[in-house]
Amino acid sequence: MKTLLMIFPEGGLLEEFTGLLSSDFELIMTHSETEACQIVHDRLGEISAVVVDLELSRKAGYPIMDFLDSDRIYASIPVIAVIDHTPKEEELDCFDRGFSDLLYPPGFRRNIVKRLQNAIRAKDSFTYTEMQKMLKQLPSNIYLKDSEGRYVFCTQYWHHINHEDKYWTIRGKTDLDIRKDKENAKKAMETDKVMLATGEGTDYIIEENDDGVHEFLELVKRPVFDDEGNVTGIIALINDVTEKELLKMELEKRSKTDPLTGLLNKGAVEELISMMIGNYYKEQDHCALMMVDVDQFKSINDTYGHAVGDDVLSRIGRIINGSFRGNDVAGRIGGDEFIIFLRNINSKDAIFHLANRLKYEISKEFEKEEYAGKVSLSVGIAVYPEHGRKFEQLYESADKALYYVKKHGRGNWHIYEKPAYKAVVFDMDGTILNTIEDLLEATNYALRKHGFPEHTVEEQYYFVGNGLKNTVLRALPADTSPEIAEMVYTDMVEYYSAHSEDHTRPYEGIVEVIKKLREKGLKTAVVSNKAHFAMQTLVDKYFKGCFDETMGETEGFALKPDKAMVYEVLRRLDVPVSEAVYVGDSNVDLMTAQNAGMDCIAVSWGFRSRNVLEELGANPIIDKPEELLGFFDKAP
Image 1 (tube, one colour):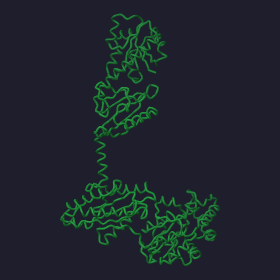
Image 2 (tube, rainbow, N blue to C red):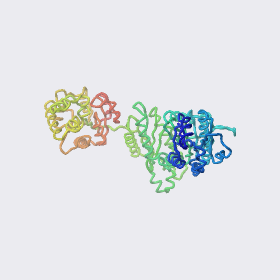
Image 3 (cartoon, rainbow, N blue to C red):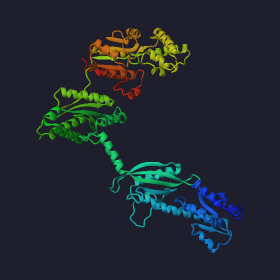
Image 4 (cartoon, rainbow, N blue to C red):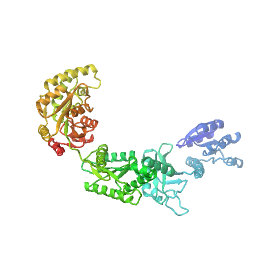
């Protein structure tokens, strides 16, 4: 409801017009034009029109008009005069002073209300037209839409609009009616629909290229509300941000691109490959990672100069970029080192074909140069998931294959081959021995004794793995005092020492597999975070003659996942870490192998499921003990 400021002396006209207007307008009353001026100043946003007793205003010299004329901020407020008789000629000078209308008897309510509304609308229209003219001077395009998403006006007719008639108008049309780019038109209408429903503004950037002019436009949209808070339309600002966006794209490209070769730089290519492997590929998919090194590049630089060296690298980058499929990824990761990720490989033959093609293209590229025959590439190849399920694992495998090529003459390629292992280091709990029930009973016994809640076997799976003390700490509430925790631990160890063999048994088939590994000439060991005496007791009972070395919790050696105990048993076995493999069932085991720098075979029959192991990046994973034998066909 609009608000009228009424300036009347008491009685007569004031009472009459109050009765006529109070049902259609909010009324603010005053008997003084001086006070009226202050009200307009203080409540500018509320006042829709001023209704003034003409006789009162004329006698005072029209002070309200002088005030409204003093600042253009008041230009949108119409002033309507009221008299109680048919106006005389001299009273019509009110129009010369800027009054919008003059009301006098006889007056019917509907007629008076309509004339007031028209005066307000006419004044609004006047200022709206002035505003539109001013807005057209701005470089930005400003437009207004109605409550149905149709254009009311816009300050610029930008070239993306589809029209030729010089008398054409945007008024009443939708984005689909006027825009050449129908996809962006649909997007505009969808965002308008949401804004009209929710009353929430939005900002976004679109790319336009339909008529050959490549542009980026920023749209800032806000809802328009009426006096009751209803959304009546949309006002928006369109800014041309092409220069800013192109600069941003160029800077982003430079931050990810090697300037010499045009390939991705080290950080960008490794991040992209890691993301692809982590998000897109499963065990049934096959991809390959190529590590490429320019042979004896230092001698080319030293003999022919850095300009020639840069030219060689630039041309190699171009060949790499042109020799592979569009969905493959390539980058330069060092001075003379490149990396290529081949996606969705059907067979190893396809990898070999691409490697041979690269070798041929390099030879052909430099055959007429003074240094012909001196530029060659060594390539190491690793295959996903056979040689690793994570980028780091594939990188390490491909790097080992690259080292093999360099060691055997350079200028060729080689696919990673897993080494012939000489030793196998086993974890105990969850890998060769199912101890979970006895561990659970011992834990629950100690918890029950001290008034703590007991746990299920599923929960116990996640308590074990870092020694008995950590098992107890994980089972206790987080706010348990150290003194109470030590008492619970002592009782748990005492109970477990007496009952560690009640339910514990080797996993089916594991004893036979270990014996067959030993028959193949492999050395075997077991490393556990259990106290050494408890571990040795179990080994003697269930695995007599199965291990060359055993090691449990021992003073002076950090527990797993630290590498200390693994290194100690390998030292005793006299086997280098590169020729040994670790077998385990949990995240602790995976971390132990990683910290030790050795290969790891994960087993799914223990305390972690296959799904959990896959999420942890385990590769390979076996589901039955006999599958272990397939990894040692090359054993001595």
